[in-house]
Image (cartoon, rainbow, N blue to C red; front, side, top):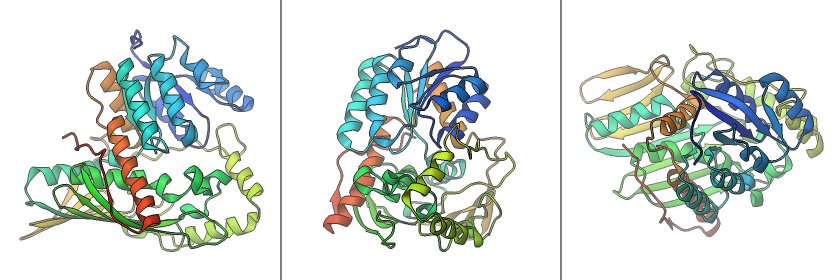
Length: 399
């Protein structure tokens, strides 16, 4: 494992796609991190990166990992490259954050975890909404016992995922291109974090509701934990209702029903997969429509849909600025201040930094990411075979 010889953890970014437009500014804004390298196949993206960040561009992830000036790698390449990229980094002693989903298969997750353990590097699986402070606060209330035993978890999310511009592989289920693989890790991490981590079984159905976009755009799942606690989880990306109407955050306003209509209209107007791919390509780092994405510090929480947790003596739900609790004798608000909690990409970056510098265990480590992927795969398998799927790679929430 490479020794950290500087005060800052020096990051290389593998893949300058759309995700990197959010990752790069968050690394650069962190006081203890530094962007020093990037790897991508597009020369124009590398040139822009070198100009804007004064780092070094590489044509391959392996070459970037060979650099002695890089301490850690953020892997945000397409899903099928996650395993080889993470293993290459581990073999060269680089710590790693890998974008969700961890990999397309359990076998690849096992290989990634084996490499991390063999070479002694820290491996963190991000980004998911289990990093969100309101969700972590929910888990804190549950484990405190103040509301009694955990009885039920409900989480559902309706949004416009299927009507955003996509590359062809993003709508190809054989390549992991559907909402279950892309959005499932967010929802499953939330449920697993609150429920204690160890899922016993999954029964689910998926939906393909638009014949012009032949990928799963919705799912409904019944998830049972080892202790018998049930969780009900639903998602729809078909751009009709948006749960942000209830959670008070849509990026534009607390409630904007025209947003989903615009998403559908835009896809209709593009007409061909080639034009749609060109629009998506232009949003990658270095593209004509690139946007460096950050969220205002004083904005309400950007919840992933709606999560309601039921205990023996009360229910907990999200609110725009924290949580609301409905108890036996009273109701009360639990504010969650952004000034007191790391959140979003910043939280995962800080988690890796502290794990490396202070030699702490990683909370969202490779075994956690593998367990989450197992639930995602179980949703797909259960829907295909129309039966309950039992799991074997689960790990507990590391309280």
